[in-house]
Amino acid sequence: MKPMKAGTLTKSPKGKTIILNDKGEGLLVSTVEAYIWMACDGSKTYSKIAEDIVNTRLHDKRPEDVEPVVKKILDKLQRNKLITY
Image 1: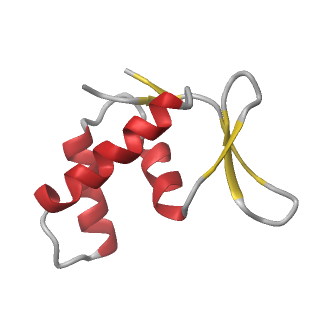
Image 2: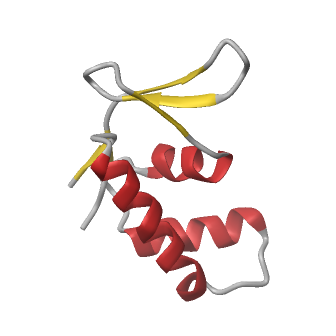
Image 3: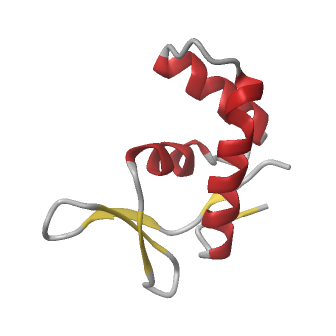
């Protein structure tokens, strides 16, 4: 499955990162969660997103080790109507 982001990335008045869904409901997200949301362009599987994180962050981890975390974050984003499949 290839997730596609929905909503808008913004900052709170205190500088915190928030993603707003189409109803204007906001979710406070971490830097990693925002990165994963931005990677959801409809062309990548969650496995490819995990691989990109490993390559970008220069981790000593393998994509297979990161995939469960990516999947958990994608589930959270989907529950909050911030990605679609």
